[in-house]
Length: 224
Image (cartoon, rainbow, N blue to C red):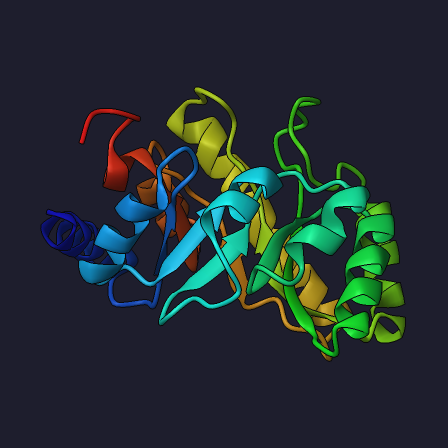
């Protein structure tokens, strides 16, 4: 079942991206590990989870052949739990959190890939850097944070937004990445994680390199 669903989505992504490489992340929150393993059999090898508790309950460090990213809000006091279990943390939204991840990763003799989350919609309920001054302050500190490796940026589009408003949000992230490359050429801003099940085609048109799809793959809880 998942093989056909994933193949169809990849075809849609390829058409929208006009041949540009865009990766597909399956957001597996609320779905059991059995469902995730079925998706792996169908060829899906990149997964995202929102909650530390679910990661602890569903995954071990002994995963075979697929990657797991933390994509939800992460509190500093949960970092020790999640760093050993994931391959990337895609929701870094403060210097304090970046420092904690770096410290924990170094204690485990690893370097943690991260994405920096930017709030591009000005919605208070969403995470991410709301101040670009704070964001650039983090980038200034990166040389001192040897336990993390910046791979790019992440954002979430406006809840129920129009195409115009949603694409404006995604274009904002693209522009921030472009400015960051100019100001910090030694850092990597290649990954632009933006676009979910309701707006991923718009995100691709605005330069997304990684879309995060949940219901488009798994359906809503209990549907498949």
